[in-house]
Image 1 (tube, one colour):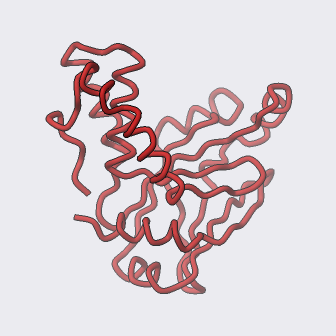
Image 2 (tube, one colour):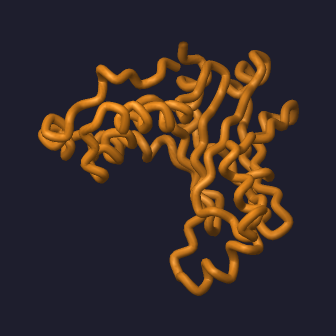
Length: 195
C-alpha cells in the first residue's frame, strides 16, 4: 500500500474547510475496520485513509505549520500504512473507570505480545508489536495504545480470503477469542492485496 505523500497533506486552513466531511468519512470507514475483543480491547486496522486523517488531525491539534514538524508526523504515521501481505493494527485498551484502569493495567503488561490470528485450522500468525510496546515492561503497566503489524505469507493471504479468521488474545490475565466479522474481513483483504 502506498504511503501518504506530503503533497496529499492539506494546510490547516484548507483542512478546516473539508474536516466535517472527512470526519464523517472516517467514522464510516472505521465501522468496517474495527474489532472488539471483549471486555476491554479494541482493534483498529489502519490503512492510508486512517493514516492521512491522523496526520491531518495532529497538524490541526498541534497547529503545525513548520515543514519539519509536518514531515516528522508523516514519517511517524506512515509506519502504520501496511505493506502488501501485511495488516497494521492499533490496539486500544479501554477501561473507562480510572481506578479500575490503575488496578488492571499492571496486570496486562505484555498484552501486545499475545495477539494471534488463526486462519481456518491451518495457520496461526502472531502480531508483532513495535518497539514502543517494550516500555510496558519498563514502566510496569500496559500502555493503553499499542501498534502492531501482522505479516502473512502468500499462502496465508489466500487462505485468509477463504477461511474463517479468529483473533485471539492469550495473555495470562486476558484470554479472549472472537471471529473476524465478514465486513471487516472484506476490508482487510483489500489491505493484504493492495500494491
